[in-house]
Length: 98
Image (cartoon, rainbow, N blue to C red; front, side):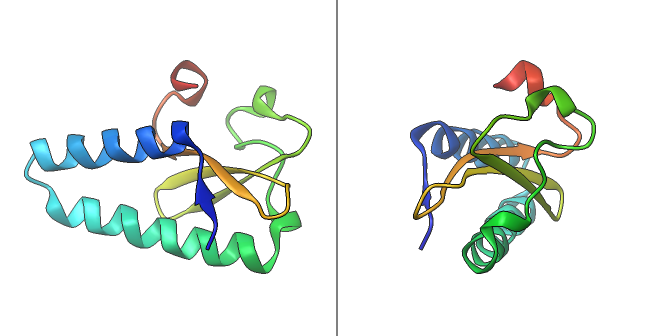
C-alpha cells in the first residue's frame, strides 16, 4: 500500500471534515474511493503521472508526479515506494493550499 505524507493525511482529514460538516457523507466515501483508485494506479505505473496539474504548470517539481482521479488531483513522489504528498479537490486553488 502507498503511504500518505503527514501533509496529505492532514489534507484528506480536512476534506472529510468539510464534507461531514455539510452532511455530505457520500462525498467522503467518493473521496476515499478515489484515493484507493489512485493508489492502485500509482503502484502499477508511477511514471505515468504528469509533472503538474494542467491548470498549474508552475507546480512541476523534480521527483514528483500528479494524477487526477475523480474530482481530485493527487501528487506523489517517485521514490521507492511512492508516497502520496497531496490530495486536492480539482476545483480548488492548489497553489494557495500548498
